Image (cartoon, rainbow, N blue to C red; front, side):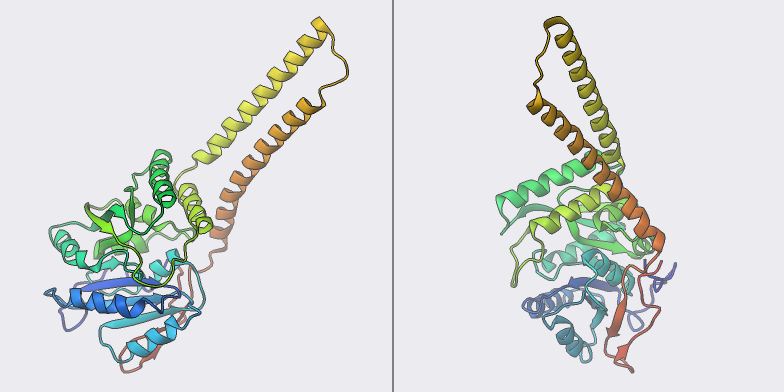
Length: 339
């Protein structure tokens, strides 16, 4: 993960470090960032604690990173982590949590579908002893029936397959204590499904419910293909049952082929058979070929994961960290996603 995060980090006084960190991954969100920061500050200014807003620019191409960097050199509450290219949301979120200096950190999407106004309630739950405060969606405004239904079914399927319980209908919007951040820093894998990792650490968790709003501005970067890829990533990251299903499919196909072959032998012996059967032969070959390719594909997914992990490449590469300080821009080779 990120070598920048030490194994222990004491909670210092307000003059030394912010107590609460808000981590906002952003990719091509130039339209919504002014609204996001304004709403965040209105909420955070009501809290009896200091704070920082850590925005991770995930290689935006619309000027989001440059705009944020210009703001960061004049705003004492803003830290901008610019990644060298687009590494994906899971990597950007990992980078943001690694650069969070607070006693607790809250992950929040820049699109404002997750309301910042719920942050005080999350903080109160943390102060009551929760290491993780997960926000579960009651409703999903602005999303189609197909997307809501597929998300509902996916979370139930994932929990049926996974050895750990991953809270359903819960995204990345959550609070993590310093202890939870340290636990996350000890997870080195490159294939990251953050919702599953948040659940895997197993620390005391409180779940709160909220209504998800439509995007405040801009357009979603998540089409159905990317969502399907993320779903498959989640399943293969926390379960090997697809491999067992492949074995079952292979056994079922072999049993079907053997039974069909026996039927042909018996029928030919008892009744005789003219030279025919081309359509049925092709159907059986197609069935068996499809099962084999499906099995190889599932196996290849797991082999590919092992290959990526074996290369030990950093999860992300930081271009620079921009904030108001003596050196307004800070770039360090150590600020990578290395475990």
